Image (tube, rainbow, N blue to C red):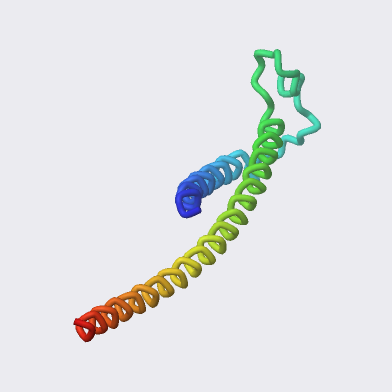
Length: 127
C-alpha cells in the first residue's frame, strides 16, 4: 500500500505540472481584446477541414481542442486527488494496525521474558 501511495504522489505531481502548462497555453490562445475579427468571417483556409488535411487548424479549433484536453486533465487530476485521499486513509489505517500489533508484540515479549525468569527461579528452587 505504501509503495503504491509513493508511486501515486509523483504521478499526481506530474499531472498537476501538465495541467498548469495546459492552462498557460490555453491562456495564450485566448483572443486579444483588440482582435475585432469575428469568427464568422473566417476564410476557408481557417476552417477545420478534417484530419487528412495538411492545412493548419484555425485558432478557434485549436482553442476548442485545448479546452477539451484541459477538461480531460482536470477530470483526471480530480480522480488522482481522490485516489491520493483514499490511499492516504488506507495507509493511515494500516499504520494504526501496525502500531497496535507492535504494541501487542512488545507486551507478549515482556510476558515471555517474565515467564522465562519465573521458570529459571523455579528451576533453581528445585535444584
